[in-house]
View (cartoon, rainbow, N blue to C red):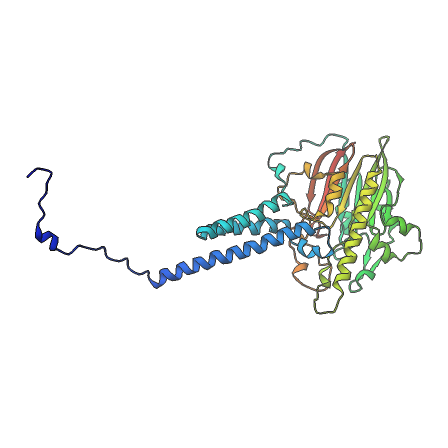
Length: 404
C-alpha cells in the first residue's frame, strides 16, 4: 500500500453526516423594526418627491403666474432648511431607498441654494473697509403708516438719529383699519416736515416721501405714475395703490444723481385669506400680479433710459427666491455686496400691530428680506447695513454709504 492510499473505516461511512442547524426565525420585534424601516424609506421618498416637485414648480412659475405667490410665500430659509433636514433623514433609510431619498432631497437643496437662498456667502470673508470722508449717506425705511401704531414723534426721533443726507421713506400716509384699499388718505404735514428738516428739499408722490439735503432738479414720473399725473382728479386711494415708484434727480457736487424711492405692491394680504368667504381670489391675485409687473417693468424701463448714477431703495415686497427682481438685477447691482450679514433679514420684526385682527401673520417672524437697495451707473458703495427701528416698524432700516 502506497502512502498516498488511504483506508476508509466502514464504521465512518455508516455514521450519519452532521448538517448545519437552520438559522433561528427573527423575533417579532426584529420583523417589526425591518417593516418600519421599509415604510420609513418609502414615506421619505414620497415626501422628498413632493418637496422637489414644489421647488421646481415654484421656480418655474415665480414672477410668471399670478397664483405663484402662494408658492413664493415661503421664506428662502425654509426652502433650504426642509431639503437639508430630509437629506439628513435619508441616512436612516436603507438600500436603494436611501439613495433615492438622498438624490431627491439633494436636488431640491441644490436648487434652493442656486436660485435664491437668502444667504450672503461673501459676508464670510468680505471686509467693506472704512467709509471715506465726504461719503453720501442714504437711509430707506418703510415707516409702517408713519408710526401710526406707535407715534409719529418716534418716526422723527429715529430719522434724526441717522443724520442722513437723503431719506427714502415709504408709507407716509394715514390709514383707517377696516376699509381695505379705501382706507388710505393723504398725510398733510409739510409744515412739520420743514420744521423737523430745515434746509432739506421735499418730494412726495402718494405714500412715498423723499427728503434731500441736495437740490431736487427733476421728478420724472415712473411707470403707472405717468398716467396718474395726467388726471389730477384721481382719488388718493387710487394714487396710493398705483404710484409705487418715485424718482428724484438730485444735484450733488455738480453731478445729477437719481434716487428711486420704491414700494412695490404687496402680492398677498393675509386678511383676504378666508377661503369660505366667496371672495374672487383669482381676480385678486391676477390684479396684484399685474400691478407688480407694471411697477417693476416701469422701473426697469426708466433705468434703461437713465444715464445718471442712481440708487434704488425701498420695500419691494419680494424675497431673494422670487424671480420678480430678475430684470432689476440685470440692470443694477444689489447693495448686499457691501453688507456683512450672512443671513440679512429685514421684515416681520417686533413692532406695534398694524391690524386689529390677530393671527400668526401679525406676530414677530423675522424670516424674510423684502427691503432692497441697488445701485446703477458710476456709484461706489462703501457700506450697506440693516438697522433696528426700536419697535417702530416691522421693517428694518436700510443704511447706505456711497460716493459718486
